Length: 215
Image (tube, rainbow, N blue to C red; front, side, top):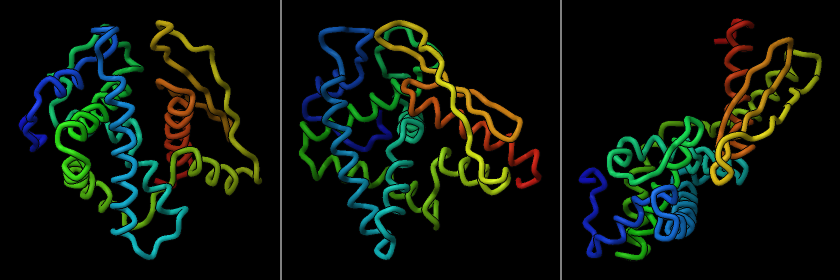
C-alpha cells in the first residue's frame, strides 16, 4: 500500500490489519479496528473543529457522521488499494463495504501502535481534509434529508420504515430495510440496521426527488 504514505517499523501490524476474521478467527484485525475507530473519530473531530471555527456543534456532528461513515471509509480503502491486500473469507454483497471500512480503521489502529497518535493523525488528516473541504455547508444524512423532504411535500407526514429479518451467516448478517412515503418505496441493505436504513432512505429520496422534479 504505497499510497498510504507510511512505512511500518513492524510490518506484522499491517499484516494483522489486513486479516479479516473470516480468514483467521483467532488472529485478525478486530482489535485494531476497535482502536483505529477511536483514533479516526478524535482526529476527524479535531480537524473539523479547526476547519470550521464558526459552525455550531450540530453542523460539526453531521460532518463528522458522514466522514467516519462506512461508505466514506470504504471509498478511501478502495483508493488506497486495500481490497487487493486484504485476507478475507467469503464476503456477501452487503458486507463488502463494511469489511473494507473495518480494515481501514484497523490500519489506523496499526499505525497508532507502530508510530504513535501523531503519526496516525497526520495520515488521517492528509486523507480526510480534502473530503471535509468538499462541502461548504454541513451535509445532512439521508434519513434527515428524506424526513424533511416528505414533511414538506406530503402534508407533514413521515416516512415509514419496515425492518426485515437479517439473512446471511450468523457471524456476518446482512440487514434489509424498506422505507415508504408519498406512494413510493425503496429498500436498502447494510451490515447494520442503521446502515441499511440510511441506504434505503437515500434510495427513496432519489426516487422522490426525481418524480417531483427537484433534481
